[in-house]
Length: 223
Length: 223
DNA sequence: ACCTGAACACCGTTCAAGT
DNA sequence: ACCTGAACACCGTTCAAGT
Image (cartoon, rainbow over all chains, first blue to last red; front, side, top):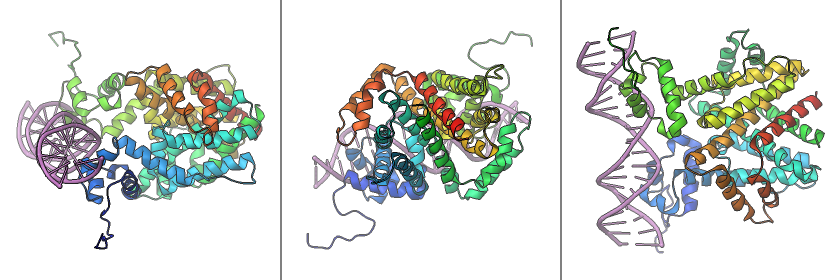
């Protein structure tokens, strides 16, 4: 009560799950998943590694909690005055942009699709389908198709993020993959070879939205 | 040459990458990813753990090699006399069915989307798009949309597989998730609550094919 | 060239002991 | 109730030493 608690990176108040998750996110953003160890986390929190287990069940729970906080903050609360299609696009783009800022989220989302963070996305997507005129019988398949696509892309960008963290830049990574692809046997891999050229200079957001639009077009067409 | 080498589960010939990968797959199928350690693998191969590193760079490379072998064997060589749409469906179902037999493949595919096994799938899908009449400009986006959907689903079934390995059965797992979903706040999660009922008794293959069809319909419609 | 297996540098998690 | 930190039971990977 008397002394002004020093606000360095150390902790003065009681340990809470919130502080733990917040600190974990900071480590994940800077060091990636391999950097998040209970020892590193405890050190940053100026506590013992065992103390964390009083607030969090285990490492999986910690990662899920961190992912959920990121996704909860990233999803647009409500998008007024726009079409259902626009809302779904905005939602998908919110997820996409989050993956750029917090690359580890991609692996976490695609690796544990029943976690609460994923359910938030499913809810956001599903809520629009009624307005889109999708029959109740088709809603389940339509929503999970959109969700699977989003999670699939999440996995893809997750790996690229891992390589980015390793020091390379986007052009180098895609250039290396494109070079590798274009050396493939043309007989066995004609398509991939042909597409290799587009890989290096395609726009990620555009590709992502194109996929969303394809599925939305399919939903509109088949109902 | 003289004595008939005893064919127990031990190895008599020289260690090769093929034997290593084969043994790794056997462990993965029975014990899952956590069961695959270099110590367990070495013991099964009746060799030292260091010996494996002479043939395989590291654990990631071993997992990628195992996944590639599974996918290479699973993909239909060529499907004669059927429409491009049927070929894509057959290809997707081949991947899907593989995930049931080798559950760990799902996590591996979605976790490392640039590995060779994924490229095989991309090639298989992409090769059909020309025949489907998709313009060259749209082929890249169409193929990656299908691929992302397949990989997204792969991740989803991967987790369920992990839970199945832990001893539960399909009905229990989905029942538990459905029960959890239906307890959600109806105000905040109306869609997920509504869909919870369909979760327990939906057909996975049907859901998967429905997703493929939605994307194919979108591809056909937007071109 | 290929294999051995001890050793290194880590992990997540537990738990008696403290406050 | 909450925290400490040593201890346990593992990992992947390396590497001198063997054949």
